[in-house]
Length: 144
Image (tube, rainbow, N blue to C red; front, side, top):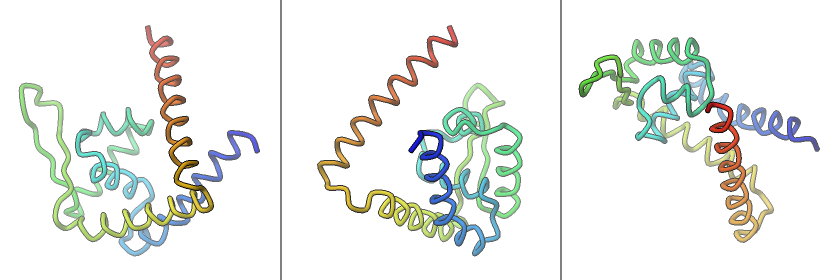
């Protein structure tokens, strides 16, 4: 299997697990992704960080943040000296969505890793860390 095919298949499988949660709460997949990213990565709490870390378009993230705020799922605040940096935080109203989303993510991971031993999973994680470091080095080289 080619890498592009594998990536597309992983995305499709993830969508199959996320879709019931999106339907239950009437969320777009982008809104689901933004909300779960914020819940799972509280150290990255601005739209700019979501765009950077998830490699999403600014307009999609912006529209999703606006929709999530309107539904009462996100709070926005400006802190520190940079008033342009708006910090995002999931609210209590989002807790059921986040709980269902995390359960879907866990089911996805179980399906993805079915049949792999703990040792194989550990080796896989180490290899992914090494690939991530290679990617970061290559991207940093292109930016300079």
